[in-house]
Amino acid sequence: MPRERVELFRESKTKEKERIIVLAFEGNITEEEYFQEVKSSSLFNDELVYLHLLKRPKSDTNSAPKHVFNKLKREAKEEFNFNPADELWMIIDKDRWKNIDEIIELCRIQKNMFVAVSNPCFEFWLLLHICKMSSLTLKQKADILANLKISNKRNYTDELLGDLIGDGYNKKKPRTERFMEFVSHAIVEAKKLVVVGEDYPLGLGSYVFKVMEKIIR
Image (tube, rainbow, N blue to C red; front, top):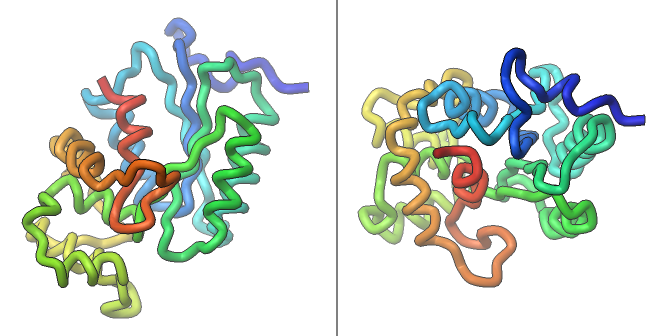
């Protein structure tokens, strides 16, 4: 039997929220830090939304989308009572996984489970905070999509992101507070890349904006 919803999701001395949104991540550092930063910022619509992050220990190296799906379904949907308005979202990248269509279909069956895919990676979503796609050359766009390794620790998108920020970018210490004032810009830029009829971006794009629009004021 599912535990009572209030046990996990009701904050002390606050009323129950109209909507609970639970997020599970493919990555175990950048994405979690980013959304923790959103939660603590003035952007977050905490009057109506309770945002719960399913944390993945650094020791858990299984980040395949199906693993993320099963974790989200098991630890949230099956263990706690959800209202019809509540939503569970997977935040995953396209550059490493080939079975995203299968995951999307599994989510459709669950009805209130969704996927926000970034192509090629979550760092592209961060990139949208600080640049306009129209300012990038065709070669830069192609290189982002290919996202080849520059070194053992960096891909092309990481390198470009660090260059545009001006003081570097480190996946292990992403300092996501730097992006908060540009969230609206990222949403606008991400929407420009949406192709009608695509469940997730097959070219450059990030559907993380769909989650952001639900949780910010």
